[in-house]
Amino acid sequence: MKRLGSLAALVAFALQATACRSVATTAVANSFAGSGTGGVWAADDDPELIRDATPFGLKTMEALLESKPEHQGLLESLTSGFTQYAYAFVQMDADRAELEGRSGEAQVLRERAKRLFLRAREYGLRGLELRHPGLRQKLESVRDAGPALQQLDAKDVPLAYWTAASWALAISSGKEDMALVAELPVPGAMVERALALDESWDAGALHEFLVSYAAANGDVASAKSHYERARVLGRGQKLGTDVSFAEAVLVPAQDRDAFTKTLEGVLSADARAVREYRLANVLAQRRARLLLDHADDLFL
View 1 (cartoon, rainbow, N blue to C red):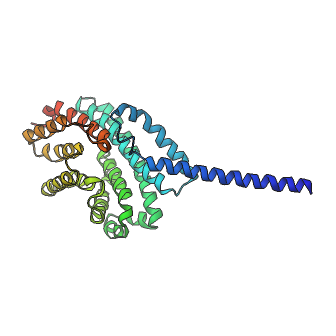
View 2: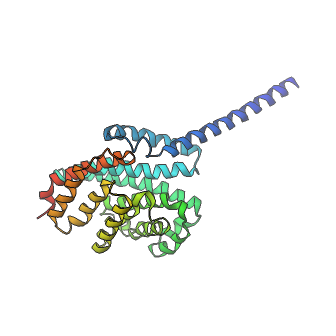
View 3: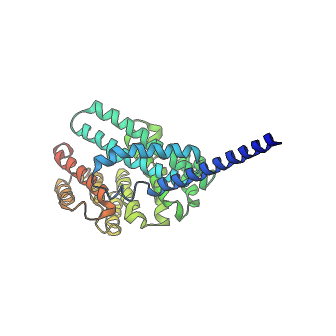
């Protein structure tokens, strides 16, 4: 009986320990998911520090997700985190290598960026599927995507945006993958649905996405309209909006004067003035400088 009593106590302790680990894992997961890539990360003005720190944070969240596979906060943070890391650093390195004539290096970096964007998309689709069972299968058909996305509601907007962004950027990085390119209408429809649900989300981020998307589809008028609306909602505080417009609209239009004026305006702004956009604005200025330095390669 004494042995049985000891065994019962041991089992009870093990169950309590398991419960405590579960609670602790949930608490840590919530903490990581809550911080995401915003807060002190977004307010930092040292891109190299963030570049070095981000992979550890992302891998930690992936490890936590193994224990909490349906944790919506982690799925959303991983979707946004991998998207932003791949675009701000890996894609930027690829673009720099391309403009500097290092095409082999650029190709390797673009392939890595594509893989990271697809990893982000996978987390996004997992999160959306948990909220709306059956949605993922419907999104596999471009024809069915629009009607299927009608089930999204306002709380889905952040995850829908990051899923669409990672999807579109993967396509941009992998233009040789025609099966992937054929999926382009799906992220576009996803952002259009998000726009209908909450136009002002993240100070015009949805409109900024549609600047590049509309321009890529040859609809310059819509691209300009989305640009103006994005600037209104962002109160002119998000420098990336102007950089996106310069790349997506002014380069194809070969309007070098407007291109130069727009990007010089970005460089003359105080990137550190608005705390929540500090890192994004510093990165936007770096991209503006890269584009201006290689304007001769972009314009006839």
